[in-house]
Length: 327
Image (cartoon, rainbow, N blue to C red; front, side, top):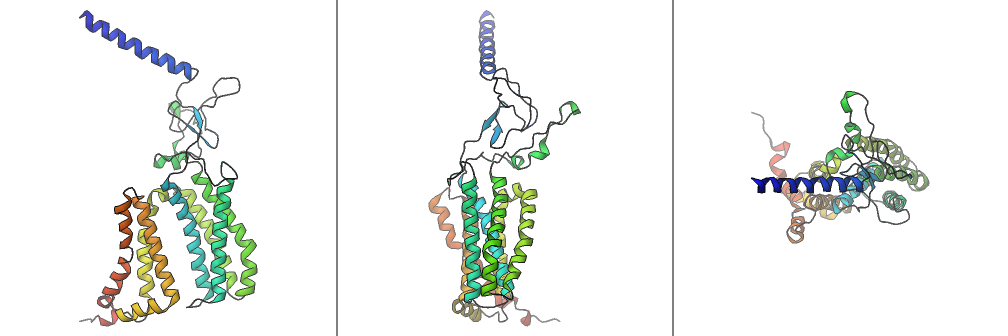
């Protein structure tokens, strides 16, 4: 009995000493309510009241605001790449629709190249403007869970009295980088594209600019509301959209025979480029899902990229409406 009492007293003493030591290290810092409220270390050595951490900081397990010092992981870069690719694909789609031409020509190709230049330049400038400024490296906080994207919904209300406003960018800088990229893309487009459109495609080229002035605010609104959901689901969005758009591309052909679909794809440069673009997007989605954690096996899955196109060509004759008979 004495031995058990002695062991209990020893364990209690160790626990108390560790708590005292932890409190001393943090200057008696008490935890804040909520998931994202933290305290800032003031110049006089004391800690502030619980509130939101400054931009580029995040509250740790002890409710102290610490500076983000991580680097984006592979999945984060794929997410940022997806947002850039989405804007580029929409640019190309609007240019193609506005030009009203079924084949590539020099005028349309110039606008396509201009869109690539605008997106690549905007992405590079976004990286250069991110911390540390002037480098292509990015200082960030790791994304831990979905709620990190929606800190506005997690402001605590202690004792149901006063709400503590602790809204912050817990996924710094993945959330705001996208908005900066969109703003720079619009600015570069308004600088470069009007002159090219007026010179090479004066009648219809300006319509692609008007379209971009509509879809960029829409993309920004979607990012503001659904940014976290997109972050976790974009690989599957890419896979589904690439399969559907690939099927739609073939479905618009008047002749659905296997021979025509193959010949029209091989001989028409535009059709071949569109098909290869679908394959590249599909491969991007596979890489984003697997993150190449098993490089040999996951890289081999990229060989399945042509499967949706091959499946459509082989089965198109069975779904041809002209061959359906109503009894």
